[in-house]
Length: 169
Image (tube, rainbow, N blue to C red; front, side, top):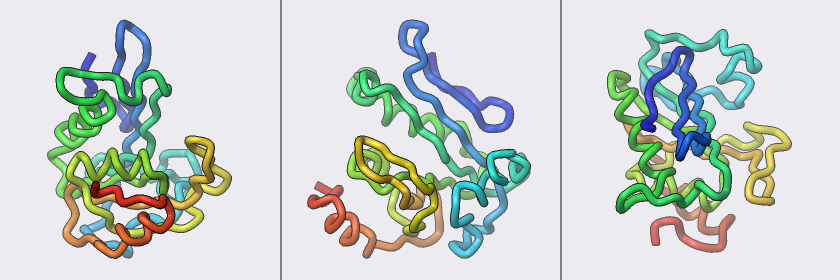
């Protein structure tokens, strides 16, 4: 099944009736300004209450992209399910002027965003305290701009130092 926009920003994709990708999106106003990007997950989500969600906001934030390991690289035609889901998210929120993701600072996550034509915007240190992904600490977040007015290319060098390899290759 394809991903569709759901009330309050929740969506999922299924493979053979089993959840394969789960997405959460937050809508807020940023006016396309880096200083208006919330610095922590709690700030973004109103401490998990979602009271900060504003359907009329100008920016769609993809804040959760979860997939069981067996579906992370699952093929959908000539693409991976993760890539198809992220592209579908962008289509679903194309009415928003700005589209960004707040993604863990991990090599697999960075590759997913770069491979779907996003560019790094900002590094948010300790934005998700105590988060661990792929067996690695993932407390720091990289904001990726899918549709955002400014990018920080120097973050590619920082990622290469952290990951020991370049996500652009």
